[in-house]
Amino acid sequence: MALRPILIAALACSTATATHASPRTDPTTGRAVFTGATSSNPTSIVLNPAAIGAGTFDAVYFAFSGTLDRTGIRSDTLDIGTGDVTPGDRITATALGPGGTVAYVNHIGERGTFGLQFHTPPPESFPADHAQLRYHTLGGGQRNWNVTAGGAVRFTSGLYFGASISHDNTFLRMKYALDGALATGIDSDCGGAPCGVGNPLASETYDVRLRSDAVATTNLKVNVGILARVYRGVWLAIAYHTPPGFDIQSTLKGSMDVTRAPRDGGTLLRGDGTVYVHFPASIDFELRAPLPNELEVHVGGRWEDLSRLQAYDVRGYGSTFRANGVPEWVERPRGFHDSFALWAGVEQTDLGRDGFLVGGRIGVETSALDDRDTSPLTVSPASVTLDVGVQYRVTRNWRMQLSYGAQIFPAFAVKASGFDPRFQLACAASGHDYDTAACAAVRNGYGTPTAAGEYSRLQHAMRFGVHYEW
Image (tube, rainbow, N blue to C red; front, side):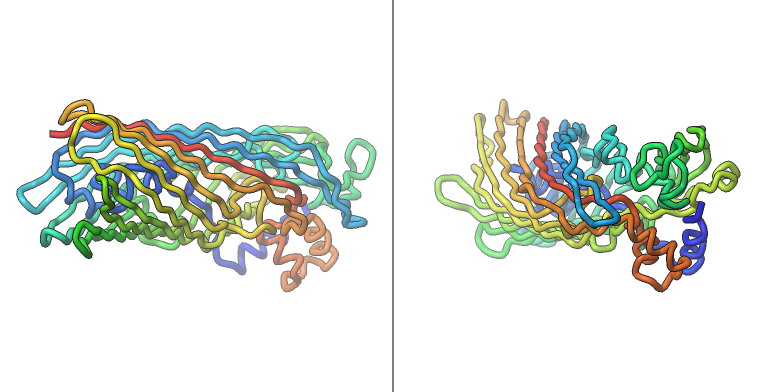
C-alpha cells in the first residue's frame, strides 16, 4: 500500500504520544446527589478518601449504576473535486452501559478509617454497526475494573487527610474501517471502475481487542485528598487522582483482526495489536454548607487533564499483515482538550431519622474538544447537567439511595471538519514530504473521509445504592 512508507517513516521519527480517553469520570458519583468530595459515602474511597474519615458508622455498600447514551449523527460526504458537502442520512446510536460497586468502610480507633472498594464504572461505548460511520467507528468501547484500598486520618476535629490506591484493569475494543483507495490511489480499480473516496469495495475493516496486564504496577492509580472545616458547619474538600502507573503512557496489548477489502478478496487476517494510551489526571473539589430548615448546599466541580488525549496509537504485528500491506501504525484521533465541570444544588441533611430525603443539583461542563475534532467516535461539546435523588432510611442500619442524572449536549453542526481525505491525496502528490501540512495531518490520523455533519447527544445516568451501617 502507498500509505505504508509514510507510516514507517513517521514511526521512526516521532515519539508515541497518542492517547485514549478513559470513560469520562463516572457521572453517577461526584455531581450526583448524596455523593461528592465532602461526603462520607463509601464512593469517596476513590473520589476523596479523606471524606470517609468524617463518617460515624462502619458500613457495607452495594450499588448498581448505569448510563444510557443516545447520540444523533447526520454524517455528510465530501466531494473532493469541488469541496461541496452533501448531507447524509441521520442515524441514532444508543448505548447502554451498566456498572456496579461493592465497598466496605471500617473506623479504627478514634482517628483512623479504612476503606475497600470493588468498582466498575459505566463503560465508554462507541457507535456500532452503522456503515456510514465506518471510517470513524464500527463499535467497541472501554471497560475498567478496579479494586481500591485506602484510608483516612483525623488530625483534628476539623481536618482529615486521606489516600487510596487503585489497581485499574482496562479492556478496550475498537472496530473501524480504513479506505484502501486513499492509500493505493482513488483511480485504482473497484469492480471495473475507479474507486473514488468512500467506496465500500475498498473498505478494509479492523477489529482490535486489547487489555492492560492482569497485575502490574502500571495499573496503579493514587487518590489523595483533604477535608477541612473552614467555618462552622462549612466543609471544603479537594482531591487529586493520578493517571495509572504514575507515568505519561500506558500500554494495552491484545489481538487485531483485519478483513481485507472486498476488491482484495475479503480474507480475514489475524495478528497481534498494541495501543499506547495516555490516561488523564483529574481534580475534584466541593464546598458544603448548612442552610436553614435542615438543608445543605453543595457546590462542586472537576477538572480533567484531557489535553494529552489526542489519539489512539495503534500498532499491528504479524507476518500476514506485512505480506498484505496492512499498516504497522495508525493513529485514531480523539482530539481532546481539558474540560471543567461545575455544579451546585441543595439537599436535605441526613440526621439519622427514618424516612425520605430529597435533593437536586444543576451544573455546566465545558466542551472536551473543538468542533473540528468532533467525529462519530467522540462527541463532547459544552453541556448542561441536571441531577436529582432520593434517600429512604428504613431503620437506623439500613438506607437506600436512588439518583438520576441527565447530561444534555445541545445539537450543533460541524462544517469545517478536521478530517479530510484530500490530506492523503496531497501528501501522496508531494512524494510523502513529511514537512508538509498534509502529511502531518495524515500522520495524526486526519487523512480520512470527513466527519462533517450534525450532532446531538443526551446521556442518562442512574445509581441505586444500599447501605448497611452499624
